[in-house]
Image (cartoon, rainbow, N blue to C red):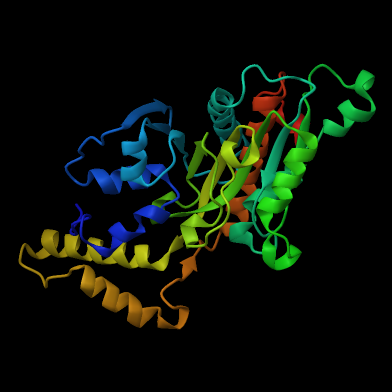
Length: 331
């Protein structure tokens, strides 16, 4: 049960920066689970894996969710724990969904460009670069030795553009320049996301066909990477690796109130959005209210998820790659 009115509480203000579409729809629907005009939703289950597809159909749905029109596929995955069988199964499902968003059919001699956003020096933000480090680029083979390229390979290019603070160049400028130069048939962008629930960190993969605005989940304004800005289809893949402390505070108080209700069956002090804001300001004043946290096991989590995503992309692009042999197509 939620003890706050999402229409008025301060968590509502976070809706524009929520990276995960399922969290945005949940907040907008509220406890009554009301339908959202201009939005269609479908949920399917494959074993332990839940797949939630949200499609924003029109401007009304986009305005209400404050997201771009398009299809968003959210895949809730079980705990990985370095199990190769689990990694293979998840990668196959992600590849299957990714294929539905890529151009069909893919042209063998026109590359798919994979972009890994983030800072490789900061583990919670290193998901994109780690996926690139596992991806085997093949575009140069088609360019310089086309007769020697085996039939099981398609053209794939990979780039980790780094971050502005290290390169001194806006990420968009790098990606736009490379896209203009090599003219890919599609761009796949991987980025670390922020979540509005602790349970989603490292357990959710989101794929969207409307591109991405890097850094939106942590309040930074960067140029959007989408079909309008790059001129080719852009598919975004993201995984939450961090959470805002304001959300942790909200969930803590919400669970405390629920505990009081169940344990003592009596009234408890009133807690509203002003109370939460006051507590947050006091606790996080040294960070100006903007503190992100990440799990202790983040190194292993990012490593496992990067393997899943690299394997998924290989299976979606190369015609003979599958869950049994994907390791032949990645590093």
